[in-house]
Length: 456
Image (cartoon, rainbow, N blue to C red; front, top):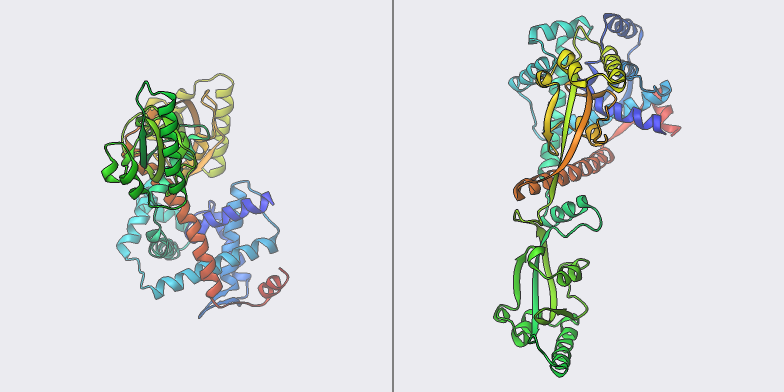
């Protein structure tokens, strides 16, 4: 199962455009060309009013297989791999048809901009980059078409899914609390109402019993559904009684600990089911709402920043993927044996941080590409060195030097939380949307593909 999951993630990551990038040798390109010449074309799937041919399927399968082999990843059995590739192509074709219905297009300037950025990431001019692609046996017009496809699918997702994702303040508050773990202090502002029955500091037993009896009677009404605002106006002895006992939004640090604890398990709109004894007397308390902390008080959540350095090897004509991984493995072994990571970074790294020994300084969440951040977060802060990590820029060797809590501004905390929640919700929404799109499409497999589908 692990091998199948690895293949699926590689397949999805490859896509149409990325798959065209994997032919790293003229020999591989020639093998593909020879294979194409021997494949008799036929239809393997009908997708709404379009078709997928066997030649298209064979081409894509070969490209994906090449990529898996270059990454030293397990390659599934041929029949299983071809079936999964075909399923991915069907889903891609359905999306392109939907994009056409929606009137989504990508102009030449946008495509050219994408190609320019790819060339720059590989430290080449566009002409040199084109020559390299064509030398690998991939026609430039095919490469450009695949770039347009990738951009089209991205615009479709933005229109149909990402633009419709919303994140509420309550979700942000809950996310921030969850990041701090169980037992951490409440970091949400609390909107409360209360009904106060005051007691003097030197209250007698009789005064305490009288106030408690009155408060208990009001508590029973409040918990049985009587309008809380009216009860506060009628019975509260605090100065805010005329406002229905409304305290507005308050940071937990400005409230008594017993109140914060009492409302911690409540849903908005609920009344604390027990009477609270506070420094002012007896209180009946209702939680109106929660929101993410709006200030820079001690209650504001803390960012975990990581002090990290890295070595980046870009995959270019002079450095294949396999060579980059092996070089970083060799460097890692020498660092573990006591060699200086910074010296290797100055000598080999192809990043702007090379002159600083690869030091990127203190990194906050969201400031690096996801692949880098995931690997960085998985390392201990004792100088541990990662394995080679692939990103869109090349291969990284990462070393974590330390971590710290940093007081970020409230707006920064909110932005980070909102972005993380939005990405998670968007991924789930996109998956659901793709399933619905697939279910409403007409798809008919033919030939061997039909037999494979029937055997599922």
